[in-house]
Length: 421
Length: 158
Ligand SMILES: Cc1ncc(COP(=O)(O)O)c(C=O)c1O
Image 1 (cartoon, rainbow over the protein chains, first blue to last red):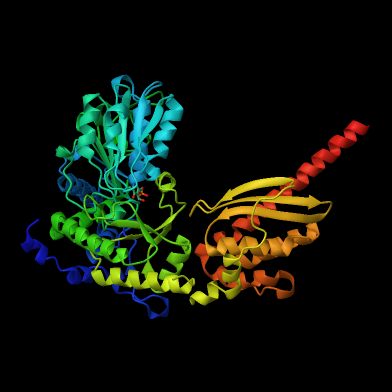
Image 2 (image 1 turned 180 degrees about the horizontal axis):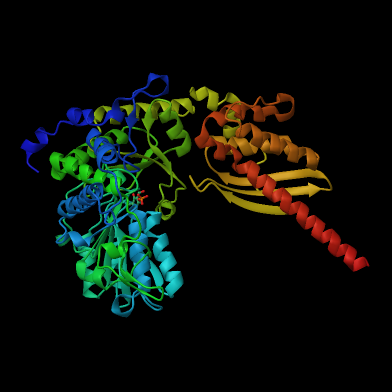
């Protein structure tokens, strides 16, 4: 990341692309949107792409033989090309569209349970996750283990939110079949050393699944060099629409895996007795896919590529560093996760002494500052840190320092409101 | 919407000085309820003395609204006739689900009328109801258990 291109990152201009950021809330408050780890806002170009698809091209894909069908199919497949290029996938056939990251992770967990031969997870095998996973990367593996008799194990993390890698050789062993971990924690903000863990996993013959839901939106990603076998992410957190997610998988693995859902589009031929299945990615895309959403995701990728993911990552780091510095000034505030902007994403969860996160979020909301309160679908991570819930502010490519200031002012006000110091 | 509409003085008072807190003996039923959206939790016990709510005790973690609400609940139902307490629970439920359009009866709901404003904050209704739903669940269990014991006793006699 050169200083030159950082200087050209113009957040004020970027903000103009997002119509929602200029809306007023009840009472005339300016929106301060600090909940992008939950879902990001959408630029006009994405909104237009979805709307134009419905206005001009709408038809089902693959099965419509008319002009609209051709246009729609082309637009859908073009989106797949864009995703493949954006994440450095060696082949477009490695990109499977799903509804969201959750479905992508469930897809992998299910087909690994169903697979015959070497890839299948069976009784006696072990699946390793981490204590900082989103529920979407915990529950599918619990279900898999319950169904197959495999055992679930996990990496712990320290008080600073870093994975305990001293456990690496003891946790990831010859018995390990799958290691599934988040690249960036949506609660702690930690960026995990995926490649290092993947190396060990591959040494012992385990597959590596990466939940990149928070990573793909924030930084340059190259799946070809990451070391993962499967990568899941979700469109709505990367300025794209809801209802579309991606599972990337290594081609030779996808080719060996059985279908997840059965239905239209995923077959080669069907008789009433049995069917044969299409090759990937179609094998894993039963039924009418999220077409307009894929088109919107394509537009989102165009938007991100134009900004440059290196510039997006640099901006994210800067805003996060500023926020962490300002949070240090707030007495009674404890950051849950890394307190320095090193190997850290743009989600900062914290506690405010004596005030419940719900109440913090409510008071902030009354001033137009939107944050998340609760367990952020990462209950085990909260339990590990001995807290029941937290407040989370998360930043993105349109966040400006003034919004961090509004957060800090809001926190001071919250403390006064509840009669604190 | 103004914050003070939500955080009425009465609510903040109950939050800072909750009544009836802590788990007590004796009790006829105990339940554990959570709000899956935010993780707030309550363990609540009900003790019945014939048809009177003799005690409600609890241990809870949660926001000001959920904590104040269970404190108010205790004030309202302890010592009341069972049917009357159930009716009050219904009334509170109606108030919370009334989108801010239900006029609460202050003579009956007492401090609980302070929660009228909560009904306008859809995200907080579950917080206000956590303790009340737990209480209803525990009470129904306590009544059922008593009925079962009574019929067992009758069978023994016959
Ligand atoms: C790390 C992580 N994994 C998975 C998910 C699930 O994403 P989705 O709900 O779009 O499936 C999220 C977002 O909530 C997340 O932050």
